[in-house]
Amino acid sequence: MTFSILSFLEDKDTKANVPWETKKFNKDDNIVLEGTQGMEIFFIKSGAVHILASLTLENEQQKDKGIAKLSANEIFGELAIFDNNTRSATAVAATDCEIAVIDGAALLSYMNTNPEKGYQVLHYFLNQIAQRMRNNNIRANTIMEFYLQEQAE
Image (tube, rainbow, N blue to C red; front, side):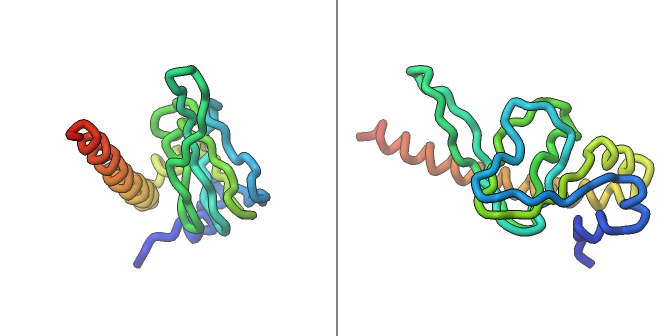
């Protein structure tokens, strides 16, 4: 049986212990901003979300660089419950979308007191993080290939 974060959130016991709500965002709305504090985790129920990171160029010009496009049934913001750092990227609605906004602190507490369910959630998070790391490795290799080809010329 495949784990579904939405089924998990709608479970009676989870609902009683982990507050969450569905929010609607219009295309181009900011959902979360890079550099801000927050413990919320976001689950895309419908629509798509661009994940952007700011880059500072040599001339100190700021550029937002797209690092991912997420769609329904994907999560973002999950790192907040693990490292308590500021948000590492900005999330912008790529389309009109519905997002489940989950109280990350309550989820972490629930995972600790319900280790079997907590393991399933953690496994789900790690699968998503691992896929993103693999995609980033492909991007990094492509960039390195271009760089090395340019150096060889």
